[in-house]
Length: 287
Image (spheres, helix red, strand yellow):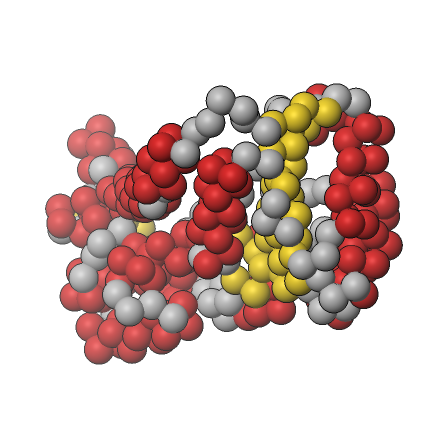
């Protein structure tokens, strides 16, 4: 093969033919094939940027309110040592009477799950409303799944989210527990009773809670992951391609592509192609 043919093949302008040899491809089709991965990466970054921007903007009002309500007395207590932290959490759980809201990022250690289960069940038996928000990636771990199913069976509300900021416990909307270092929970915890800060933390919890998915429905969210032609169509759709361009690149009829796109959007519960791409990315279907 000549050097020119090698260059054309590297650029996608020549492709192997089923009958042997190679066949010429139009520059438009070659460009679509070469640039699709880059366009997909750009789309995913734009989605991540838009999500982060919206999340931060939604907290502006709470930030200004917290600043206006700042007092000389912060009502924030620092607790150091893992045993002291556990003792404080145990006391707060046993004296809790109305509500317990929790953000649980990452995957809790099995030891922590075993210690928390009887205490959480006791809280639920007293009629306390418990809402837990766990990270989606952790739900597939058997200990987390068993713990969560136990809580749901006892009356707790549990949802999952792909991203959570830090561990947070709010007891009776009157006391919050935050780690001093989110990466090392044993480093210490802060007990927050300041009304302004508590209001902000409660709004933060509600922000993530409203956007999360019920634990019981998470397995069905979006249905089965697309494969084969469906996946190829989804990747090109997420890259911003129109039905005609997708059909041309995959060698299909525009009508067939339109049916597949409609089916994917219905499975994702999306009202627009952009929303479908965002939800597919959240499900990990574009990885």
